[in-house]
Length: 438
Image 1 (cartoon, helix red, strand yellow):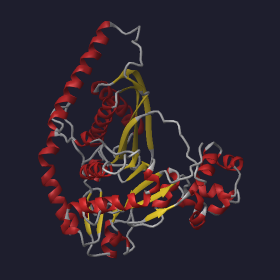
Image 2: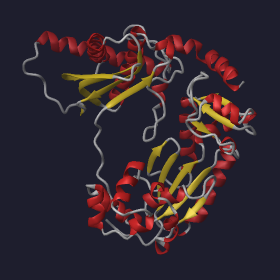
Image 3: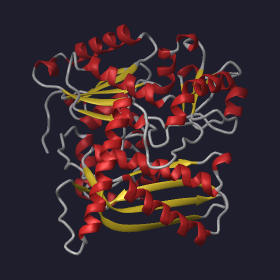
Image 4: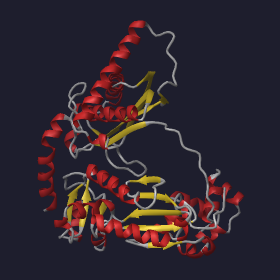
């Protein structure tokens, strides 16, 4: 740990990113309250909303019916994750003109490390970044910026004056405004963690500040307690890089995709998407697990292991085998959610050959790997899934295996559509938007 004496971190947190991205990309909705929904259904809920919509009491998770009741003028637009990722990369391009991006935390949050003169002129630098973003993208894609001695406090500062805020937290000002915050305003303190803190007599950030490092460690049951203690005080903490543990995707199924054959089709597509990500990052997997969420609330899951592999044929064969077992053991005729995970991750070249593998088996595995590489090359060259093992169907709403999640920005290659989906995608989006907007 090191205690900085200057501001060293600039943190950007974009305001209502999905909704404001839609206003930026589609100016006809710029002056209206906007909500973003995952698919064209009256039974779905909002995954994002702009601040105009928020003023009506609309939140993430508000149902479509409730949103329209609260704000009849709201424009409900279907999420376009691929466009948001492209916009994200354009934003990174603007930032690189002023300061390098140290880490992308999510599609709408990024951290820049400040050095030398940047630390002394950090407020001026923040204003220049805001001006450049406004000149490049227009007035709706705003961001809130936090400036602080470490990433933790910079993120806290960025959340303190939304939207379009700029909060400076200098080392000499600590604890300062921190005591105005609730415990859950601090990254890493969830509702459950808040309850644990309350049971230890900690009800405010000031109570947390007054703890000793050892007491904090005892409450957290780990070194994370001491890290929280140090982060609050502005210490710069070097964390060990986390190793990749798995690749996977899950999907809640729409009502017309809950039959076994449709659930398997979706699981097949998710498996292929996970396998592509695994290969792009240069890994193999030696285990695969699936989870089946039943409509009666029960869940079935199981795992299988095999020689380290990277080809679609191996993963699809194992997935299909597990699905058949799950179908028989659960007795289900309707499924609500399916997910797949590739485990036993290792970098290429880390695994040794199987001494007991027959020459014919080794040759077969090599052929499937070669074929998979050829398919990847063709699909990447064409920007769509033009070739696959068997028919690959895209479920309603699209973006299977390519949705944005906190901590993961999908690669643009993740959005490669299946052949059927590619032909009808533009027409589907246009039709769905007309229906959703109302």
